[in-house]
Length: 383
Image (cartoon, rainbow, N blue to C red; front, side, top):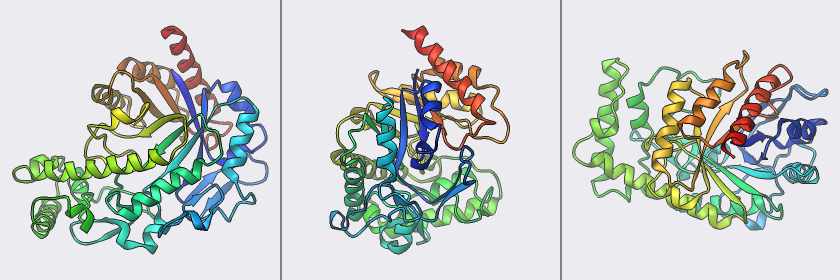
């Protein structure tokens, strides 16, 4: 299995990182070039416990003249003017392939300042963390971000996150929504009803919004853990119509981003669930034609993750790799990594994407080593 490890720019420039990555045997390190706000632990540092990124940022120089109406923040909390560039240079000097890891529609700072460019639910609420792919300003922003983030780096590839719609479920401030919405309600509240999305519908937008609103409140009032799909909850072909519009916006966004990228392998984070929103939004029927690899979410229990990998493999062309996205960041050791990864490979995964080479400190490093050893063994077996 191809092994890709993820890291933030400050992780890579922490003493010892390059040696650890080389010892782990990664085929590439995906470095965050643009990322959302975060408080990121730095367990390998002897000087800090965490880096606090108060807003989303571009970790490259932000050239004011390059942008349209939406422009990302610079990482003013870091000393370097080009943190990601410094990290990429360090990897390349060590002979380690570098991928550029970019987050696109997840930007709370831009969404808060530009509510007209965000996802809007059937109640008319704006989701400030979620830039809407149907909005022309967002398309231009994404294309520019891809171009500006990768400019001059000579990357071996790009890893694209949140290429599609974010939804209602999101970690936001001190989150107090866990368990509040059944899965069916979360799906309906994640359907964007902004004017740009509504323009794609053949049904009357106000009638659609009212229907979604009434269905949401009915399901909430029932108090059950509803799991029905939109196809089961909405009349006629309305769900299909809404999904086609979302998928068209996702495809347009991905194409705009890829037009801005340089050369190299293109990997996109996505879910085989067509209604999925968030960092790994639903695959579209044409995703497979545009990318080299699709990374699927495998942080769930192994049986669920196996099903996710199988579903993705079934939807993709044979020449598109399926990556299993697993995490070694946990409060307790992941002692099942070797057997889990073997099962994911048997389900159809031919890449292992390992989160996270900076957040997983000395206590969790043996888990990452076990994962890497298993991936290498499986690759040798395939060869």
